Image 1 (cartoon, rainbow, N blue to C red):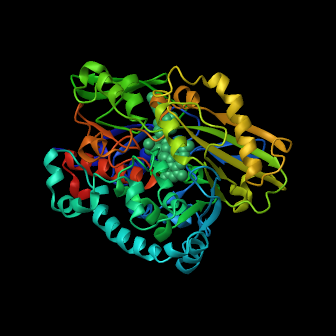
Image 2: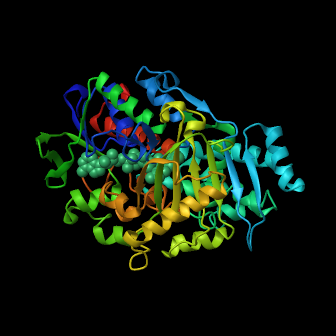
Image 3: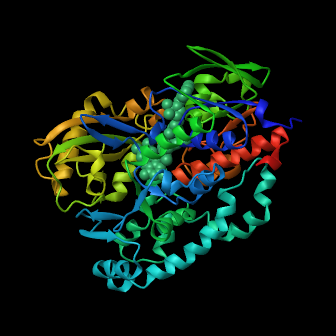
Length: 510
Ligand SMILES: Cc1cc2nc3c(=O)[nH]c(=O)nc-3n(C[C@H](O)[C@H](O)[C@H](O)COP(=O)(O)OP(=O)(O)OC[C@H]3O[C@@H](n4cnc5c(N)ncnc54)[C@H](O)[C@@H]3O)c2cc1C
């Protein structure tokens, strides 16, 4: 049993949010930490893109529930809001409902102000206004019941019998989807979508997503939707700097090419620049992709390549990052447009079909809040279209030919949302397709939100934070317990670090 962390060499594969949070915690707990990152900027999916004076978040734009990251910063002697100032948005986002066979048109400005939100709901459906407070009260209790579960490990099947799990079991309602759960509160289909579209944060359809995830909408209204100044990527950049300030190393542009093992125990990592011995390894890179790329199949029992191939994965995304001349009067910071036939849109995504022209899109106009993201007099736009992942769309969508069509659809949808002449005002443009998520970001099947969050792929059934197939290996990030989304990813880092310290016999240091 080791008594001191200071002689422990810990390598971390990937400087995504999970890897950076783990590096901060391990450095605070005295370990020698070295983070290896493939790209030349830190943050992974939570990094920034920059071109011609514009800056966009690559992935996350909704910073929710800062509590867990605040606690991690506090353990490192830092204050999150001082290190990375954030603005709580109000309205937190605008929902625009398409007009079609299943939906009536309408707009809803989601606000955390309860009276104003009730008035917004009443505008769409007067009889539903009273349900909002009931939704908040019941989900407050639900989140309280689930918090210990989302912040502790599941290593054994019997962990499912822990008192806090049993106490919350009646709230899981495994037979009920998120959509049906929210139908207990709201009758108007648009309001049902307003409180369930958040399933998409996990890359899942609300019609498939477990009812447990009604806590996502609750989190937004109760704990806020934040915009970190400089974007979510700024949080990652600051975390990487803090790791260095704490004595850790962040080696950018240095991908790990091979892992060294003695039997099942990891002993070192190999990069183009050298070989580094390790006592422990934390893997933050996309779980399924890293398994297939870096760890020999014969060493794995539970998560072999064949088993990984049979799992279900989240959707992917088609992304456009635009720098425009001029301002965007009237556009909200976040706008979510829900397709008129939302159910068909989701079915197409699940089955791998090309999307209809009038598909759902999410648009972020971050310069409405944060002028630092574009040159003076200009605006930045981020557009995300949920799409099938490369597994389900194999043989049905070829992104080389689909990309020009999707680009056209995005400009049409922007026009519908009030962004006039976007194409004519373009100063710069970047596109990321599902193919790029795989080829450039090494994300299995381009499934941007990792393994799907169905109940059979959660808790004990999701990759464990202490990886049981190998020795000395710990997992953090969206593909591991407790799941995708920044708060749960930061939580995965804390769980993995607690376990690692416990395994070293220095739990008290934490
Ligand atoms: C488009 C999009 C929008 C999202 N929006 C939100 C949102 O609004 N709010 C939210 O909470 N979450 C959101 N998410 C989900 C999630 O929070 C992010 O994807 C998050 O960045 C995932 O973090 P992670 O720790 O799993 O690691 P990742 O961000 O995936 O980082 C892993 C890192 O490992 C590196 N790596 C891979 N292989 C190697 C190697 N061999 N050697 C060295 N480094 C390697 C990668 O380059 C990468 O930097 C979004 C995701 C996407 C893709």
